[in-house]
Image 1 (tube, helix red, strand yellow):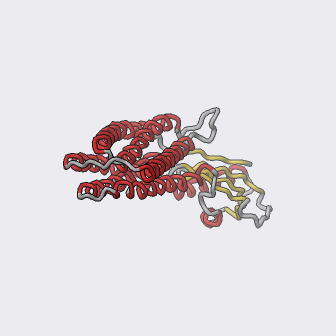
Image 2 (cartoon, helix red, strand yellow; image 1 turned 90 degrees about the vertical axis):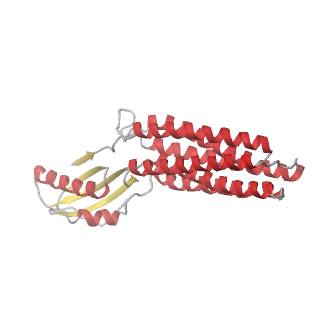
Image 3 (tube, helix red, strand yellow; image 1 turned 45 degrees about the horizontal axis):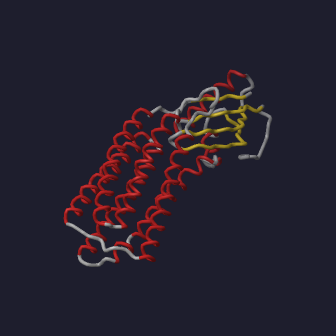
Length: 302
């Protein structure tokens, strides 16, 4: 006998979409300001920073498209829900970061080999960059706060991307101050750490989302076994498997050996097992296969 429970996660897509629209407008403003100052001063590091900010806006557009698909409720074509669309969107952010890293390094090497006109710095450029820094800080903390409240991987990943933009802007501003004091080589030299920061941010997003997409174990089977064995009437459980993301959506499968011999009593025990696992690891979708009470197995996992 199989028994399955399905409690889909809460749908916060409307709130996520609102946050993405607000941050998209702010990121477009940041791109315009950085590109304008970079073009006027001829700063390579600032133009590279502007390129990185372009990916912020692209990520918001990608997030808006992905968010419409990431429905937690299943349908005929997607019986396990649509949560992985959001993880795919987060991987898209990592891809954008990789492209930005490559472009920054290419431009820095070309400038280093071919030489360039000196950067023309003005005090007004530094004031504009200070305003840009303030906008970036607001966007990063706003997205992270809402992302944690809604448990949205997409918003948290995008906030991390914007946070990397903050450090890049700080580095670039330090370089521009150095250029203003006569150290022209700082503009090219600081383009390389900018690229490293971009790469680090992309790697973190990739590392956090791949386990979800490849169905890596979500909960140790020994832990699930220990919790299930505390339910009265359970004799044993085995072939335990789990996947998904804790706090987002978890899928748990197991074979359960129960003491009662009637279907009604066995059903009641499975309800108690599901309620216990849901309270500990939910939202969860749990599938339980009931074995006869004489069944014996030492297999905990697949």
